[in-house]
Image (tube, rainbow, N blue to C red):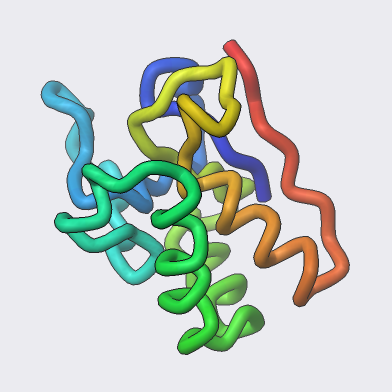
Length: 116
């Protein structure tokens, strides 16, 4: 599993974990809103956003989510995508890296970012 911006990776296994997909996304683009933030969180800064998002993740089973994402990728490596473009930091943060951190902590795996 990897992560990327909607705007930097266009290969197989793309799964949007945002509230939607970018305009012009090809047919069959997978959207998995279980790992998306709530709409009201989109205006929060990093310090408020991070604990709220991890509260959402705490209610989920990492193994179940891992398995479901791999099934959605239909044989490809899942690439979890959202809208933020690198470089990422506390001012330009994204929840896909928080999801990656969550999987890394709970599953003992590495989930790198694909940078374009």
